[in-house]
Image (cartoon, rainbow, N blue to C red):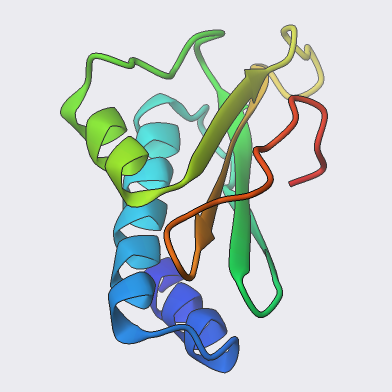
Amino acid sequence: MLRSIAETVCLTADFDIGTVTDIRIALDEAATILMRHHTVGSIITCQFVFDEQHMRIRLSSISESATPFDIADLGWHVLRAMTDDLATSAKPFDPRASGYPVEVRFARSLGRVSTAPLPPDSPL
């Protein structure tokens, strides 16, 4: 479902099919990372922001681990290869959510040259 929504958003933004495919693959890898470490009952939220040249995507969830992102994992390397900018964050344990709020943010440029890296405190 998430990949279909991503494809629709990308095509609405008039991105070419190669870029759409890269974004779908990156989104799939990011969601897989979050799903492997999610707490029971948590959901993954996803936000898309785009303009004529860039797509920025943010996925967030509640994780059982404070460090769910393994940069040695093949999925991480695929995610890195498909994106121009990649950032993650994990907040301290939230007792109300019974886990660690985590997020993955990435950007993909239409021309594969990003001019604006993701700042650590960026909403996306």
